[in-house]
Length: 155
Image 1 (cartoon, rainbow, N blue to C red):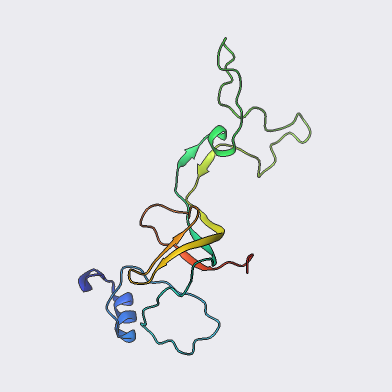
Image 2 (cartoon, rainbow, N blue to C red):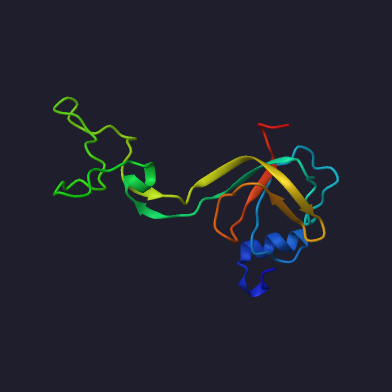
């Protein structure tokens, strides 16, 4: 629940029109058939043990990282004055074409992107607390928003 004083006017109008109390997060979700649903209705999990689900979330952001952490490069020798410890090495060619091609593996920001973890098995469903226990890891920080749906690659 969100305090009414903290909701901006457009969202306040949205919640008032739907006749629901303001929430901290507001999302839309595509549905095949809308019969049997009403605006503001609370949804419960209807999955059972043994089902497979896909989870979508924003991965943990790790900031600007080098090629060893980001892509698993081996790096060079660590001692005897090599001067090539954790670098990427050469990324381009000589006078032709005389430039580095785009899309190459270089040091840059890591994480903080939309990630889908597919086909995770449901181990347990607690309907009283509206909780699903799955086998495996899901993307995102603790407390981040996760979308899940039936797996598209497993029946």
